[in-house]
Length: 338
Image: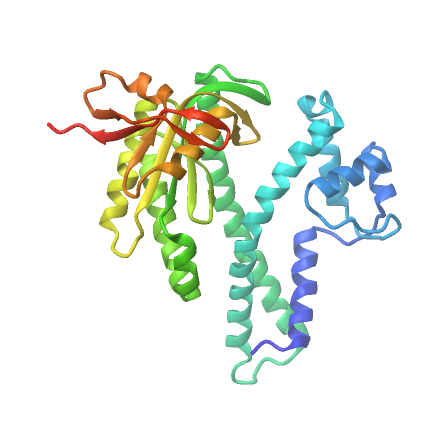
């Protein structure tokens, strides 16, 4: 068992390693050394999702100074407004915050495992030895995570750049023709009231793994997962249709997984910091809400783009009223029988 004393020791060792230096500057000193105003440094710090420390608190390191200087040194950043800079920092911070919530559990589990193994028989009791065990575990585990994270980031960046270049997009906020889809679990709220946390975790893992595989293997990419729903995108309506069919088919093959509602729409969407916005996105979301369990709904744009494609069968339905759309005409998508 890791005691409170050992926990505090571990925290000091981990912090020193991760911050890459001692806390030695106030916010004003960071601003001065990085060449920005205190207001800019405060706003960027807050946008990254870090707590707003008092201006006179000595909480910052040389790494913080370098980060502000490097961020502001990018030509595209320097030429943008403070609002745009803060938006970029906010999206970076949100992505990293979510990633590190999972990583922190993994790092701490490795540290605790090594300390408990070393202290179990009472041969290791010296705080200096325990601190060295914690330092080694921290350094080795984070080194592996950094390497894997950089690898995955570079591969995803290569794919994203290829999509942007193919779509003719180089602007930060750009509009492109894309297919946008959603898939959500039927009866998820009811299920969460009766499932043990371990069972819920297994359900979400099955949902996320099967939908992610269906999306990526058919030429699309995941925009985000939110609880019982996944949002995805594809360059063409045909790719999105294959994704939707693959999602429904793969879900039926996983025992115990609830039925899904899937819908997609095709047309111009706004790309902003990795997310998608606009009426096409809203339409796909609304169609998901009116879809029957186990079916796939598509909008007029997707139906027109898929017209004549021998892979798919499209059946027109009666117009429906949903929030934000007075008359939304859905279509049911099915694989064509051969």
